[in-house]
Image 1 (cartoon, rainbow, N blue to C red):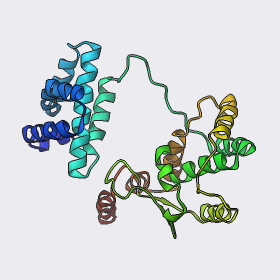
Image 2: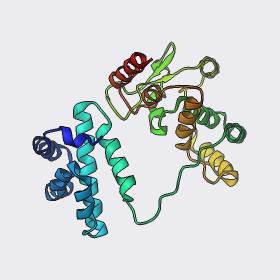
Image 3: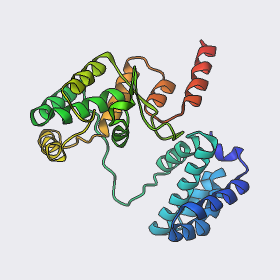
Image 4: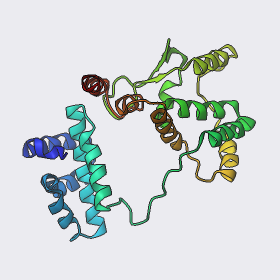
Length: 262
């Protein structure tokens, strides 16, 4: 489905330009005004691809950047993620990348590898091992874990995160019984913050881990979590909500649709 077919795109473009003038730097606003016209071609991706192939790499990337910013703006307004996901799919199918250099693929660790990685981290720092484990069992983005780094955010079965953001952010970390138990131990031991780590020890732990697993990045734990939940029978809507790819409104809507289909 092409979501750009179902909106008043001329109206949305004008609204986006006004929004950009308040938010973005002057240089980027100039790019937006120069290339936003290509957003009209999002209704007909074949024509857009034809246009892009006639442009230099530099101009092609500027057009794509403006179109993707436009898509993110629409998602914010409509409380969705469909426009951004469509752009991602469009770029993949068209074989268009942000860089002329091929991007490295993310390697998803197996359960055995994850256990080994946590043990290696534990030899350097208990806090780093905890951080890796929590990212794997929660599926939140590494940047979001800092939002939970306050004991006051822990509330019963959840750790509250960024409640203000409607999309692109997880709202909570669900506390499994074992995670809750470990955090209670950490708090009882006098740890100042739930997930605080020493950068020095974190660096040492990551260096050791990457000697054996050179592909390891914190973000691969998010992919591990999605794969694991899928194998355990979680629905796509549930995983998207837990990982912050959809707000609670979209989760509930998809959940009700699933129930009706059963």
